[in-house]
Image (cartoon, rainbow, N blue to C red; front, side):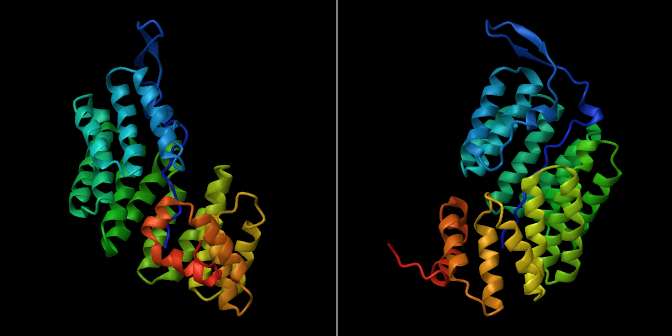
Length: 311
């Protein structure tokens, strides 16, 4: 199973909008430069962590003090997504003294590193600490981020409660940026329910996320939200409905391997020719490093069902 979501970077919330940091001019002098946490986060391209790393490093060079520390936490995050864990940790070690906001964001990233390296207990402690720090700073966006990560690392019913807590925090926040978390959180809740064998409840969460994604005018994430509904419909055995959604998504030139994988699975379940869809899914997903490393059995299934011979 693949949770096809990235974290939010929405519009700047009221509580951080007035913070001013200082950067450096081309001749090396310090200049006043209003930079918010949201503007730092806007450098993200989660589909390309290497390019994001470069942008955050360049941004950090232009900033000083706590702003520089915040930018460096995202350098570390980009490194973590590239599985360069030791390098990421070394950067975070240097950020902790940059100020309370940078320290809070570093704590979040330490937690993500622990989660990525399968140290769930340590990750949970760090996310709880990050939540406390964010609440003390009055920053709803990162408080929701910490709660959402607790919903990922904590298993079972307690994890579901963290998901629901994060959704409530986002919905009740006066910050637009924090409220924008709701679609991602509903996605996470849906997958948690799906993993626990509760697809009817999962479908309800996935369906709720679709109009929220549409309202954000983010076509890529809107398509993923629709894909997720189709994926859950397949789990429920509603193959024809699921197939209609995926075939509609396949009309988009940017349709990825996950869409064609679902088309293949639905057609296979309905007794329809499916080799072409599986072949296209294999062609696309075999090019994704993460998929090839983490889902070898799934990739091999696509190869076999697509009737692709070893080259």
